[in-house]
Image 1: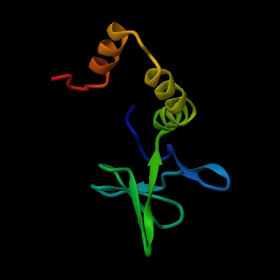
Image 2: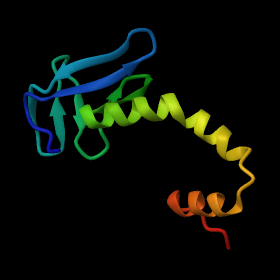
Image 3: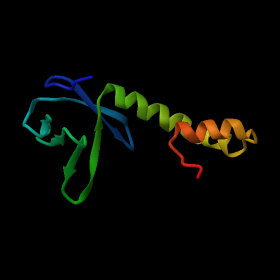
Length: 100
């Protein structure tokens, strides 16, 4: 998916869940947001004074983030107790884990 001016970007907020903001413009390297901030096109980070940068997501990235937040610990727990070597080898290959 190509991001363009007018699209919505999403940032996760600790208290309110997701906040959406429409891209108002762009430079060669950044998306211009309604609050005057700039989101790097390369890293999707918005720098902030005296705070950690905000990571923004497009809609697909938001869905991926939500899925991982919901399921990662449960899946990791299931893998941790798995006693099937063949399955563990397959999982290792899928996540790029080198068994050597």
